[in-house]
Image 1 (cartoon, helix red, strand yellow):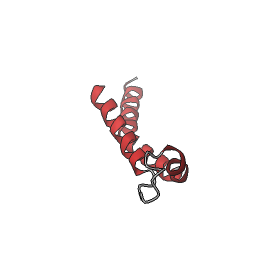
Image 2 (cartoon, helix red, strand yellow; image 1 turned 180 degrees about the vertical axis):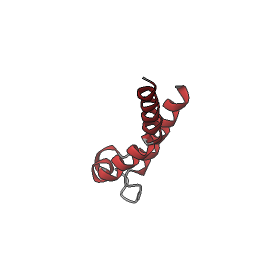
Image 3 (tube, one colour; image 1 turned 90 degrees about the horizontal axis):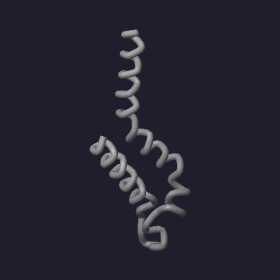
Length: 69
């Protein structure tokens, strides 16, 4: 019983620690789609954002969710 609780707590800590990494990896994988469809500056041809505004927004949202919990 104690081992199961220990593993559950370790999993919870690891999941929380890898949340930001998951967001960044997802962004890197889907960067072309994000830049074309979700980027706030997609209509500005001189912008070299390429979706990084979306990444910043998602990381900020995750940080706010973590603060509330």
